[in-house]
Length: 413
Image 1 (cartoon, rainbow, N blue to C red):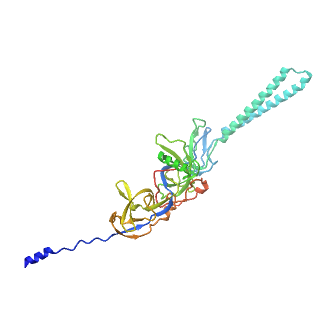
Image 2 (cartoon, rainbow, N blue to C red):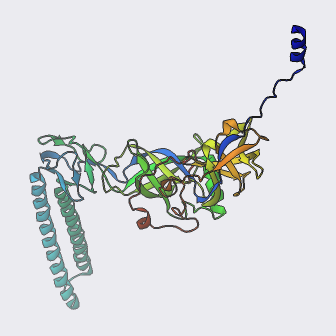
């Protein structure tokens, strides 16, 4: 009986392993957008006008009527040098001018009188020539006296040291009661002034990027900074995004062979006064022309050795691997330059459970696009840069909004 049961047990078959259900994945069609790549550089701010103020005449400082670190205007009195010696010198020079003019009058009257006697042969030609020479000498003496008066008048004017520019003044290097020296090579430094608005931002562009921009300009895909006002956006170290808007106004005439870089300069309006010379700043500039591309979430991009792939679901709900060429990153979306079609269903969630050739259970969604990622400066939005025409400073000096994403890095116009 036990043997029969054993034989019966050996002849029976266990139920077969069940086929697992298709993996659940989320798919979406690529987003088609017109985008612009943006590049960032680290640069520094510098004032367009910087003056080291020095004395032009020697004397005693009697006044310094400015507040250190304040904003001064062109023509404001910053220092006053004791002008009494210069007033006395001017008076002396004016007196010498009067003497010279009186001597010229005497010489002219003498010549006129001798010339009247010439018709009667009552005067020799030699006397007449001497009288004419006396007039010439008197004219020269008058001219020299006038020049001396003008020089003395300038020295008197220079006793008031005026601000030559609008800007922010530094501290007083010399205080009231000190003697200062004037003249070339020995002038005493008094203070420094740096302009506040506009403000420059200098950056160094690598040679590879310069070649890229030259090619884009040649193909009319991007306006050259040499031919037009390319917009730029600047952010300071404690700022999110690039709230300061300006344009590129200078491109150097040579590549620095020691660094392989080309210097460029952005000019920015600084009404707020936040931009201070010497600050490090991030300069954001367009790195490409506007172009149409397909975008997928960056998380949907996988790798297979040295290739980048995305997984798509065909019309039989079977997974396929597509080799793609990636472009720039715009927020959380990656540009796909080749390998995808607009009608493809890209797996954007559940890639770990999807295998090429295996069936899946797809659920279709729409890729969410952050509007700020395609409208704020530096975010890849189209319509914010010129392609073949220059823009005026007025068109680029409006306050820019703060972008929510970082632009691509490594290149510049």
